[in-house]
Image 1: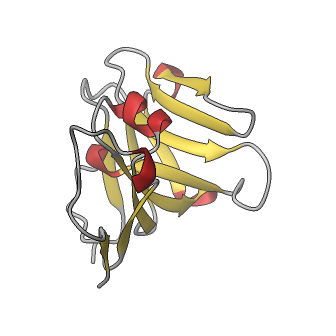
Image 2 (image 1 turned 180 degrees about the horizontal axis):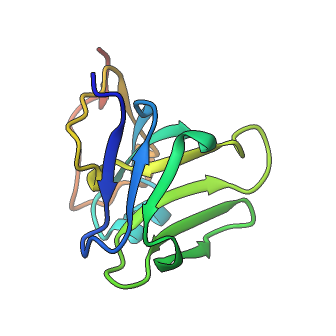
Length: 133
């Protein structure tokens, strides 16, 4: 397993380093994640906030409060979704990283699909979409 994981946005103006492997890998089908990514679902992995280092382009990250408790961050140049986090509560010390922006290979040992009830009709998943190990 790598000591750290590198990632970047589409235009490479923003790059980051994760000092620990992402945990709680989740494929989210909620409407906010779908719209944020322009896809059937968004895949995120959680990392403690203090384990995320912005290597370059910190000034190029724009934030959007998609709800009272959630802040989404993306590149202001190319629009790549990078992170989301909670502003308060139990998970405020964690950052969810859009795993599609990772440049370092990463293999999730556990992953799950959430908000399948919100998936669009054009993107049906057959049977239960929970993958373990």
